[in-house]
Amino acid sequence: AQSVTQPDIHITVSEGASLELRCNYSYGATPYLFWYVQSPGQGLQLLLKYFSGDTLVQGIKGFEAEFKRSQSSFNLRKPSVHWSDAAEYFCAVGANAGGTSYGKLTFGQGTILTVHP
Amino acid sequence: KAGVTQTPRYLIKTRGQQVTLSCSPISGHRSVSWYQQTPGQGLQFLFEYFSETQRNKGNFPGRFSGRQFSNSRSEMNVSTLELGDSALYLCASSLGAGGGYTFGSGTRLTVV
Image (cartoon, rainbow over all chains, first blue to last red; front, side, top):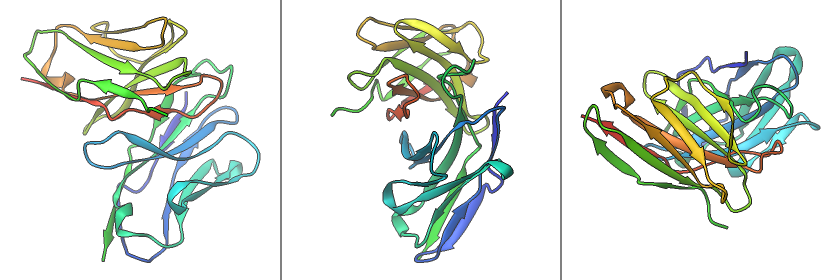
């Protein structure tokens, strides 16, 4: 069964500081990996996704993530955080094509990001 | 292009009633998935439909059901509502061929 762990429930950073949100996954083969962001009361917005190829993935809003198979990790990074980045961030794993769980995303518990001015 | 549209945005129902939520996917997307989000359990997968067929189902009781129409629009139904069904219900659509999943803004269901 697939699973995702986000070890940090809450992270606080200062505006302009760098950010790294951690994500570890469990999946039997090469997974599809996603990072989503959610503002209060809103749906999920896709930041970036990894399916195959280059392990460093660029996303929207200046975010990037690196897939490390040996560590089963897909950490999200941003070099300089803006106050508008304050939100909740979710890492998710999905089965690749043909897997029995195809079409299903398994989410981590989320990391709440607070940005201090 | 238009995103994923979920209606209604907010809903208040009484325990024991039933409710139907609607999701219109992005044009051309054939896969529609439903998720329940609560503070205690987080985001949990309900089911996924592709070309009118349920392809995958999460671990929810039979009171939760869904369907997909020929135009890919989907509905989910919850019968005999319980207080614990209060949640944000999110719908996501995808091309279905390993593409990304685009989420709607959700329907906030409150059961009183």
